Image (cartoon, rainbow, N blue to C red; front, side, top):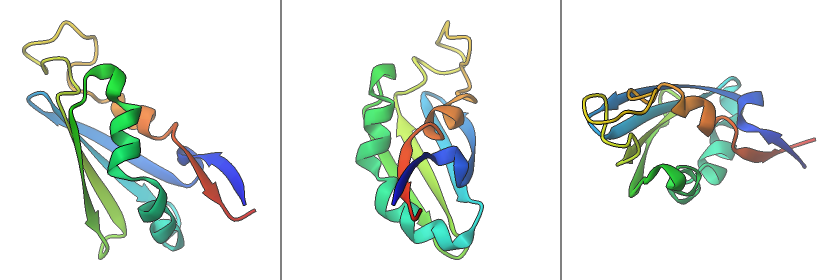
Length: 106
């Protein structure tokens, strides 16, 4: 096994709703779906965004699409209308998620 950044095996897209970020995660190879299901947990994603004030992360598994949807609460520092953050929509949150390290077969 070897450690790689998530972006080596998957892509992501982020959006927002209020102070909540919504990040989809899709493996390039559908064979990696189970590997991601095991390693990219709600707890790991919440920890990854804790510095932004995230209070909860819910993962929705989409096995027919072989994808995941993460909903992260209170991560946008108030959201589009309430934050002075340069990224009020949280579009760069997907890049943060893709920096997460995962273990894959060598």
